[in-house]
Image (cartoon, rainbow, N blue to C red; front, side):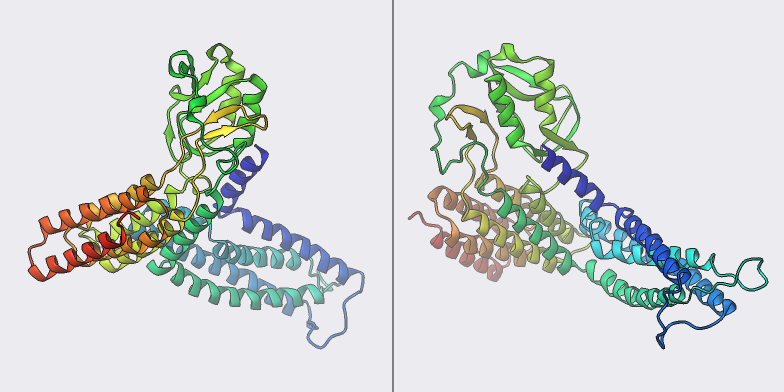
Length: 441
């Protein structure tokens, strides 16, 4: 449970614009203290590039740097807000999380803020002969402030380039596709107790009276299930010697008071068990890709659907999304899906879960884009070509049947909308090519 909670905490911190800048601001305070300590102890090296001016020059230099950093921070924040607005309108509000997690932007803001704080802290220690304090010009500290100013200018150039890059459709699609690949590698196959590779699925072990004698266990919170602590859930079932059928999975929305799980024997359900099982579910206000393979698929789908909307009318972006979806589904088709039946170390069936299926993921990827792309010949043809590309990676006839069903629906829907004979012929040709490679082996 600790790992999953730490993962959620890290995601929250990583998605905030204050965490890394705060760390860098704290680092600037430590740096200022260290440099001033060296200057006060007389440990400043006699190098040619060390600042050797007087108090007025040091004050003017650091004041200029600090003032310019305030202006640059305001500009950087303005550019960031504009980028977030463009991302929300062009790619959908669910993609904002990806932009908020961009480490480059956070480091840029942290650099500007850290430089500003450093200059202020050093500036307050500079004293001339008539200031009522002993004469002190922290030469090394002023030099480091100059170096930070030069570094900030380099970071500003990077930020302008980076901000113009991350809002490009190709970059966003590639980033989301990378998240999908990482999610596939993490979730397929998945192990709780003994995996399906170690023990075959044994549906006959489920008690016949499960639905009648099992007692529902209620959810204690509203929100999206972001993750389930599988190991903790297995420990709970062993401790109470129960069988649990989960009624939801990561990515689903639950309502407080709804059925979260079914427990057998039902008489062992009490307030403590209810709280323990609820604690094994990480619930939040939005979906994440950590244990939800559908989420990055829906992100790519949202970009494609917005591109196909009459207001944007950008089929080329939709085609890029289709290409990435076909690549992701090809990877999924080669993976072993986890068993819904989870056993403990003593071969006792403890947990029955709702797992993702190849058919469900294909439906999520193609259903809506097929519906909105009926009238666009290029999109229709690319959908059929994508299905044909996925076909060689499938290992089971049932998976090929799913793809063939989608290809048939794409063909029927498009031919019902498109009247040009040459376009209809192209669609029929692509469908026949897909159907040929999807024949059962």
